[in-house]
Every structure is written in C-alpha cells, then in structure tokens.
Amino acid sequence: MQYSDSVIVSVTVAFPEDLVSHLPGAAGDLAVEVRMAAVLEWVRRGLLSQGRAADVLGIDRAELLDELGRRGIENAVADLDELRREAGLG
Image (cartoon, helix red, strand yellow):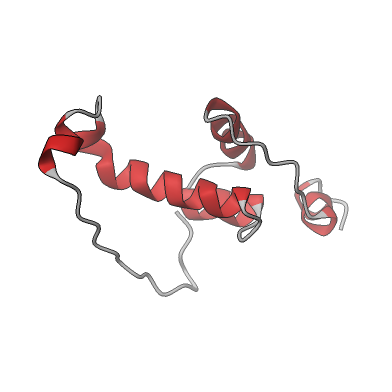
C-alpha cells in the first residue's frame, strides 16, 4: 500500500457477534471486507477516483474494476487525465 505522504486514520466499527458469525469467511477478514466495501461505495458515488481507490486498497486498477464487476457495482466514471497518465500519454 502506498501511504508515504498520507496520514492514516483508524476507524472502529462495531457489529453484533451473531451477525459476523453468520457471514461466510468474514470473521478473519472483516476489516478487509469493510475497507473494501467503503472504498467501492465511495467510487460508486463518485467521491473517490478509481486510481486513488486502487492505491488505497493496494491493488491495481484492473483488479479494482474486476471487484466492482463482481459486486455488481456500475462505474463508468473515469477521469480522462487519469486514464492518460495511466496509459503513459500525459
């Protein structure tokens, strides 16, 4: 993950234990899942660019797009300048 110039903020979220125990595989990866869900929601709402979201999650943009698709999140919003930078054109 690339956080060299960022301040990290930790957030504590409480869930009832019975809820977490019924989520397949969530107990061990709950923090990862909550982080992914939040970032993908911010992308869906247009609050976070795909490139920044991928950076925050420590994945590349193709993986981010795959994850958006797996979760049925439509996101065709792309910043033209961001796409040019990623393609090495600007």
